[in-house]
Image (tube, rainbow, N blue to C red; front, side):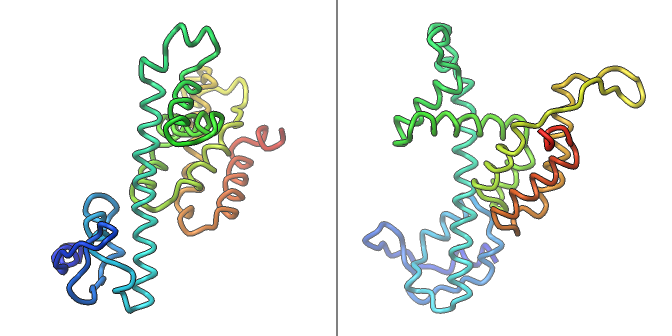
Length: 222
């Protein structure tokens, strides 16, 4: 279906830079085109005014949302990489209170027209998602979940407090707080991610709160 969509247009440039089909486009199978360069190529060749079927217009909007999620994934990875860049880990800047997250946030804020605090929060969210929530990032790249929902999961996990004095059930060795947190994060992610795409943002946040309460009661109590 994706191959059929790719070859069903004759390129004619519009004033907005997109290409339009010679006739009404047939968008059968659009919902199966994965976000990425192929979907960009498809969307560049269709204009909503040429789409007669209401269902096709819904799928066209959904395709744009998947593509936006894919682009957000690249932006988040870029922000996380920026926070690791030597330029944002300068020892002189650190002495003046510029952590890597804050420095990267300042650079992004200046370029994207954001408040510095917003830029820093975006970077902190990006680092958390890339380092702690790989399955969530993968779902974002597939267009199954959008940025507000991945950000909600990151925020919901920030206060996650592992219990003290936990031991491995087999070796009886004490598990570090960092190791416990990784395990708890993975458990919360596994509980909420499968249905995240079909829930509203409010329902998604409620599901995160329930999952945190289930796996880390102390965090919920606090």
